[in-house]
Each structure stands twice: as structure tokens, then as C-alpha cells.
Image (cartoon, rainbow over the protein chains, first blue to last red):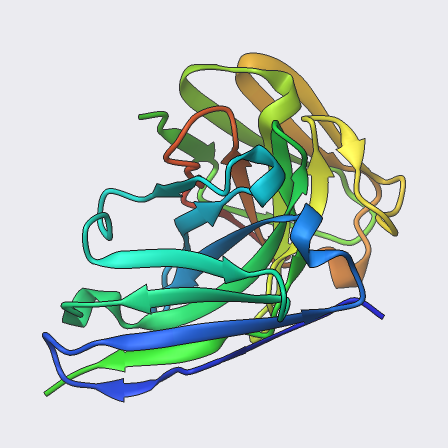
Length: 123
Length: 108
């Protein structure tokens, strides 16, 4: 069974850091590109970050709103994707979803989603 | 940066009717890299369509994606009660991999 379980969310003060984890099972993680998507309360979906598999360089992409503050990474030996979030702002408050991205080299959509972890940035 | 604009913002229809949702891109998107998602309240989104017209695993045939260039459409034939939800388009043509703002499909 394909599963992705996020953790690491919580309440954090503005300016502080948080690291989200996404533990994967049921598919070959090292062959998969991964993304993080967030959804602020009552708002739509916002794509946040993307990481290619090592076969395709393991390179990353970021939304402008988080570039320079967030870092996506992966540990293929543990089948875990991470999102390191620094210098958090109140606007970063959202449910964060980990996703698997369909495709190899070219990408088509996100076919597996975790249940989401909630990040609240507030003083 | 590619901006996706979905219309209408909301749509009120009855079960059995046909829904037509639009997604317009600010610049051309390769059909291969346009996806549609459905999200119900309190749930994670699920992939409906990828490559503009290919149904994801387990998605019923009443969901049909079409379009090319800057204009894409999601059509839901013969609406079922479980189809009412939010719908988002997304492009993977170029980073940032943007979403549209969503269309809310409501029961009339």
C-alpha cells in the first residue's frame, strides 16, 4: 500500500524554524520526484517546493514566496523527504502536504498525497 | 511565471447535469504538463487528470480533460453527488509549478 506520512508541524513564533518530514512507503522513493504543497486556512492550493530524483540530478525548485527561506531535501536511504523552513512568517501558516510527482525528467502531476501537517506561525 | 486562471469561481448544478470548468494559462502550456485535482472538505486533493486528458488511476470515465496551448477544460458528465467539491488545475511546464485559484462545484 502506498503511504506518505507527514510530521513536524506545530505552533512556532515568527522568525523561527521548523522541519517537516514525509516518510514514504509502498513505492520506490529513490526513483520519484517529490513536492510540497500548502494550503492556508480557507484558501486554495499553493505549490511550494520540488525535488528531482538523484537520477535527474536531485535538483530543486521553489515558489518565489519561500525561495531563500525553505529548503527541500531527501534521504533516499530512509525514504524521507524534508522541508526545512527558516525565518517563518505568519503568511506561512497552512496545512503542508507532501506529494509524489508523476514523471521522470518531465513531470505531469502529483498522484500521491499525504494527509497533511499543520504549521501555525504566531506570536 | 505562468499564471493559471480558472473560471467560473463557483458553479451550481444538479446531479445528472454536465459541469464544464475552464483553466486559462497566461502563456502556452504543453498539454503534457497540465493536471486537474479534486479536493473535498477536510481531505487532501486527489489527482483526476494529467497530461491534459489522461485520467489518473481509479478516476471514472465521466471525468474528461481536454484542451491545449492556453485553454484547458475539465468536463464532468452526469454529475454524481460525490463529485461536488473544489477543483484546481496545475501546470508542470515550467517552474514555479503554479495552481489555478480553484472552482467550487456546488449542488443546486
